[in-house]
Image (cartoon, rainbow, N blue to C red; front, side):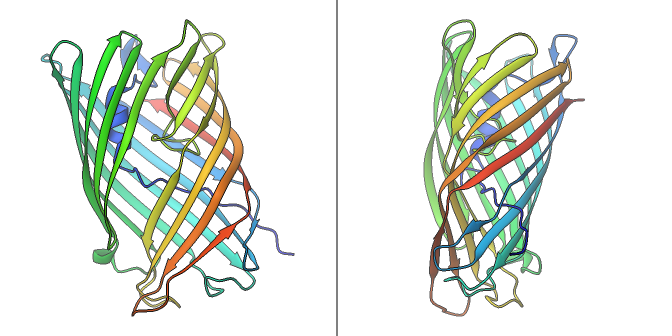
Length: 305
């Protein structure tokens, strides 16, 4: 049996990241102030999982994000995010997806967020985004995802915030509307429930219960549904079609704040309810296939610049 690494799914709510980040505290700081630039890298890997129709699937996923944030004297928050992701998929054996499946998938995204006060305790945020998502060899113009998110957040105290948002997304041949929840709520001095880190398995639209042990260490338990579509190679076995992955990662996290500008994250858990979907080009039959629960392991590094 060939050795494989594993798959880590990605989220539908790619737009939610900018709105959630606009309401969240900075990860890295300089002299007690928010660092205007943040560089984050992450990598996730694991083991192969059995497809229900036979064969195995696995993927390695890496991401690089450069973020900029500032706040004007009038209280307007601005944020810019540039993100590149790479997924290396491997299929072995026969499967309901036609055996070949797909190979390397690349994503490049630019997102911008504006957050403004709305009364004493309310804020609103709008976050447009443009992304390329395609297998190597996909037609660029057919692999674009674009849209915007609108969110309203209310602060109940300095450490308690709730928000709701709506994502409108043209997601490769489909138009989708998705609500999401923004949370950052202290449960005493050490406990907090909030949205997960973008570098983690659940992505920023997931939810996490966190415990801060001291000034350096904090831990979390989280989960979040993730799904993503991408255009397939225009010259491949499913020429010009669309691939899709869905999953529900459940994980544990340990994080170390190693200095005023450096944070390290380690994740381990399981991806549940895994499903792959294939929409072949040229009117081919749509196919989908579930695969077994699979372990999730990952590392993330965030640096304030």
